[in-house]
Length: 357
Image (cartoon, rainbow, N blue to C red; front, side, top):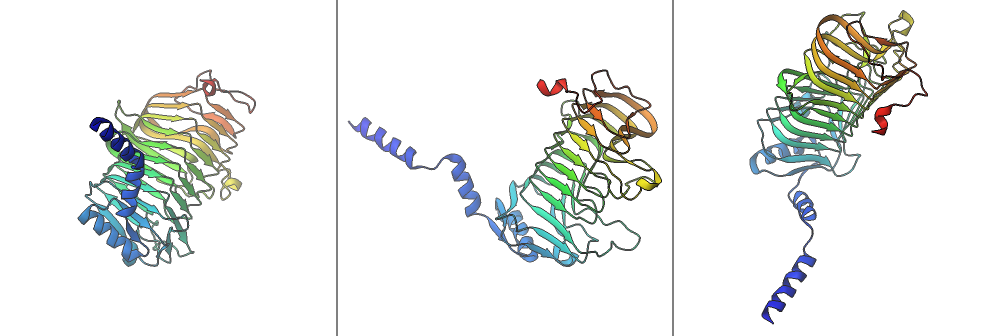
């Protein structure tokens, strides 16, 4: 009888207890640090460092009028925590001064940025003779998830990853930047870079610039993204005019990269079209590019080339262009040192066999 009674008590306790994921969500909410101004956001960053608070919740728009107020930094942090808003309108907005990075993450790990929006408002120019720095810089950091972020109208590049490892960018939008949407640059060998299900649209420069040598066991992935009308105002990066402009650029040294299931369309360079300098779809440029696969992408409607190689051509090997749908571009392929295999197709009606696999 005692055994039956204890069993009944246990069953009742299990029924009344919230599921584990609900407990985790409750803990995050209960111990959240609330940020509603530049100063309170700085205070929350300090609280995370000092006490290990698991969540910074943005409860009002963070309006940034100067770098003294809003040059935020996270450095040498290994604590696991998340930054997210309580509602979509609670975004970060920079005004008047765009000559500084809003957020710099350096030497840190185990961080999640989710559902955050970043917007630059106003026509203030960059400091004389310079390019506005990236809005967010993440360098020498690892195990970071950037999920459902929204960048709009940034005066410099929206996001720069420098020497990253095990970083994922998913479900995010990069629109209307005055420069580049996303830049990835790595000096040494990296791993676990994943850029998936994002939208790059109407950026003045290239939507995505990628340069990284990935380890054999952890291939870099650029997959299931949409690139629409980037390089729309001829904002060039690391080249002297005139040079090739593109929506997605892979530069060297890069190894072990897979670009698959992306849509790259409508590269219309409104500033330089009249000079015959058209935006291309995917550009593979520079030296030391190896083991790079372009697979199952649809590349269309770019006034330049669908896929183009930019000189100098040196040490480019195992560049595989297979089962892509490349059509309606000014020139579908311009690849002097590579060969596209026979499984690519070049009309709007053709079907990619890779989509049925």
